[in-house]
Length: 319
Image (tube, rainbow, N blue to C red; front, side, top):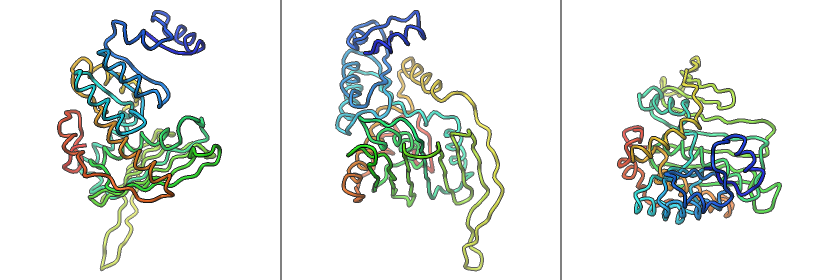
């Protein structure tokens, strides 16, 4: 089945999936004999739609973010557990073969100790009116950074500017500080002259850079060594790293189907969505207080992740 509230959307669905049942009311989907539901709707509708689907006994794959607040997200995670339903969040970047390759390089010790991470997600893109750039672009980057580090940050600082619409940030920079000394920053903007989607991981041995526009993953044999009491930059060559070219969205969709069949939580399960929400909510609070630092509660990431079999081990901790 396909549900779309607009006539144009239903017409497109008919053209793309001529054998599917096309409806205008989500209640018809929740009442139908279907096992799983994919929800790709405006963020403010996520909570009521996911809640209704779970109560109707459906497994749910919802686009990022899980909900608008941590409290809403926690309620959805509880509902999924109570009804023994799969709840998956669309953090598609975590399924990207290049990102998974970086994870494996870190686990194998190729980069050494992770020191610093930054992510830029910039473009002159679609400017939304229902959510700011932080909630629109940054969830992907937050999810990947939390996965790499293997814990929640203990402090979040965010600043930004509203240039097109009042009270809706068009540009934000979010800084994350982790208790193992790792720092990360996320720069997102839909007011940028060119498109850039880049993740850089600085390690004590090597550095990795993934450009999602050019589809290039490069590992640089570069680092800083202390020689005779002086920090000396070692500038080695960069090596292109091959990775699977399969479409991340297809991998993500298959992960939902696999989770439905195996009844095993997917990589980006409800707990994963909650962790991202916790960081986003802290960043939003910092943003509206002109960059004031916001502290997060004691990290329970390792405990939550250890219970999730698809979790990747990073630096001895489960992520």
